[in-house]
Length: 215
Image 1 (cartoon, rainbow, N blue to C red):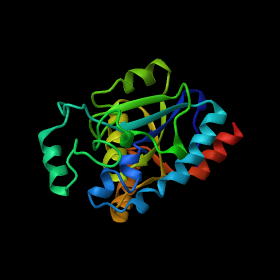
Image 2 (image 1 turned 90 degrees about the vertical axis):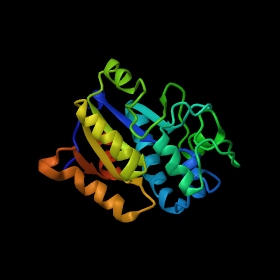
Image 3 (image 1 turned 30 degrees about the vertical axis):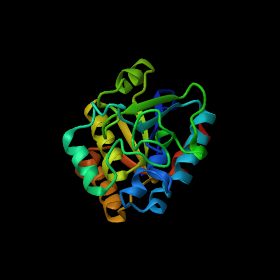
C-alpha cells in the first residue's frame, strides 16, 4: 500500500520513547522485559523525526508519567506493576519509576525533543486520555497521524484506537514500533488492516521518509 498524505495537516506522534522503557536501568527492565527488543524502535523513530523536521510536520513526544503522589494511578495498574516487581513510584537508578519529572521518564538522548516540539505527559496508555493532545492537534489543523513508539500492543495500540475514534486518519509505522513480545507486535500490526483498514494503514519508516522527501 502506497503512502500519501498532506504534510500540512499531519503530525508525527512518537509514543513513550523514554528511559524507563528503553534504558536497562528503568521500569521495563525491572519488570522483566527485554530492553533490546524495545530498543529496535529507535532507528525507525529517529529516521521519522529527521524526515518530519525537514518537512515541518508537527512533532509530538509522549511520556508515560504519573503524579508524584500516585493520585492518577488506577488501582488495577498499580497492582499489575506490583506483581512484576516494578511498582509505579518505586525508587530506582533513574529516579522513581514512571513518575513525572524523574530522569527515567525523559526521552532517550538519541530522540530528544527539539525546542517547539510538543511534549505530553500521559498518566495512562492512550496519549489522548486525561491530556490536552486532542485539543492541541485540532488547534493546529492536524488530521493525519504518523504513529510510532512503544509498546506496539499497549500504548501504541491504545493511542491508535483513541485517535481513530476522534476522526484522525492514522498511519502506524510498523518498524518504528516495538514490543518485548514479537508475536504481540505482529498481531497488533495485523489487526490494523481488518475490515478494509478500519484502524488506518501500516507503513515502514523508509516509505514515510521517502514520501516526505518528495513533498
